[in-house]
Image (cartoon, rainbow, N blue to C red):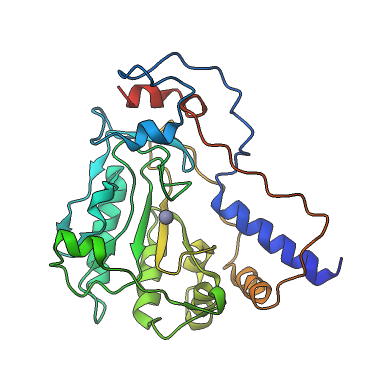
Length: 309
Ligand SMILES: [Zn+2]
C-alpha cells in the first residue's frame, strides 16, 4: 500500500468517526430485553423502534431531556419549532419533524436572525429536526434521535410567506459539482458567513457539509480559523447542512460524540477531495459491507420506554 493510499484510508476512517456516535452497532444490543412497553399490544421490545417513534404525534410530557446518543436514543419533553417565525420557515411540515430539545429550537431561531442579515437572505428554511419524541425514523437519517440535530437548507430563504403546500413542493438547491469535490456557482459568500456563524456558536459540537464546501471555506477564511474545526466534511449534505449541538449542561442521560480532532481539519478535507477526484481502485479483498440491523426498542436507553408512555 502506498503512503498516499494509507493517507486516504486515514482520512476516510476519520470521517466515518466524525458522523457515527462512536458506539459500534454490535455493542449494547445484547442488553436486557425490556418488558412490554407502551399502550398498544404490539409495542414489544422486539418491535423496530422506528415504527413506534415514527407513529408518535406529540412530545412526551415532562422536563426536556435527551436520552442516549445522536444515532441511538430518544427525547423527552420536546419543543416544537413554530412553523413560521420572523426569520424562518419550517419545511416539509407533513413529516412532523420540527421538534427538538428546546436548546435546539433556541439555537435555530438565533441562527435564523443572523442569517437574515445576509444580503438576499431573510432568514432560514429549516429542514428536519427530530420526531416529537425523537428516536429512529421510518425514512432518512440515522441520527437526529435525541433532539440535538438540525438540517438547514442551503437555498437562500428569500420568501418567508411560503404556503404549507409550497413547503412540500419547493426544493432546496445543490451547491456541489464534481461529486462534491468543489462548490458550484450557487455557492456564495453568504453561505460562508452563515456556516461560520453556525459553527462559532459554543452550543454547537459539529456541522456536516460536503467536502468541497469545507475546502472552499478553508481557502476563504481570514483571521480566526478555530471555527473551521467544527465544520466536518461528510457524504451528501449539498442541499442542506447539518448542525449537531453538544449535550446541553445538566442533561445526564445525553451522550456526547468525541470532539473533532484538533486543528482546522483543512488538510483532511483536501485529502478527501483528492480521493473524490482520483478514487483508489476497489480492493478485491474488501469484505462486503454489513447491512445495518434496524434498532429495536430494546437497543435504546431504558428511559425511552418512559418517553413512549
Ligand atoms: Zn441531518
